[in-house]
Length: 417
Ligand SMILES: [Zn+2]
Image 1: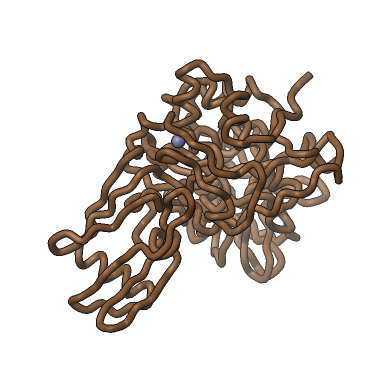
Image 2: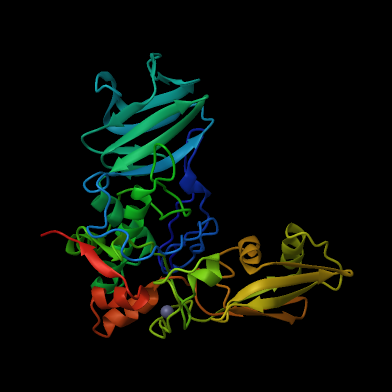
């Protein structure tokens, strides 16, 4: 998901040698958000295709599995062959799995992996996992996290999983995926979408010890620091609400700007989902990415061609060889020196950069010593168009009307009594 106005700057983050997943995210984007100035995009390249929507009648409401309500979200903050991970807070406490206090440090607690065990900064070697917390919240990999962080060692690798209350997670993600300038009803719609995405992940966790990752492969979670109040209000006003489809939690996606028409999940990822089919949308006209162009230099074009398996010669050409029913490029033919190769347009976009080729709704025009890519929209185009949601909200629509438009057939579920 990505943004136009606020750079997430995140990129990175490394606690010592621990490489954080979020860092990898040079672009944000994906599930969601408005492009922000200078920020990278949104196209979640590795997003798994949504599963086929299930038939109605198999499960009756309430939609949530019993194991989900009330439990926190487990967010993989990072993992790697680290040498040392630092967890910072005024006073950091470490506990073992059984709840016994292992140690307390002022300022920062350092942990490192020793095979299947963990070495604490004071030299003590303890069993994995170790829970780390502080009454004032802790900072890990540059991100402030409320709740606790579980640090595990496996074969000499350390992983850190933040365990965060669901509503806190929704607020934090909305603040990264959305814009504080958006209308409150658009942000409320976003909060419901973010919560719904999280609940699906909690029902089907990504790994044995985490539900989601902090980076763009899921929704961008960048900690709980400096979250503008508008996002807390959006979360609070929709507390507990999520979208369901025939008794199951809906798999929802969102993006910054559709550029005129949202995309079918089937065209983007190959799997048809009843409530992720294309809808017309001209409410995102105010988005800075409604129309865009990008000048691709000869050198850049050669680099992209090479990375996609074609050795560039003087006659290098890029041609859109297939489009989806909504006019987005699906295949691109790269040819040069008598060699011609077709690749998915998504691979081309990834190679060119998500912030530069903002969407696949584009044309490629050779000009002088290079090309101009001219397009509309920002992101994968599936599900809710955030700028469109903002346009609707400004024109008087409620968040429920917004969600019903972009996720047709879903119904609102949950919520506080
Ligand atoms: Zn739109």
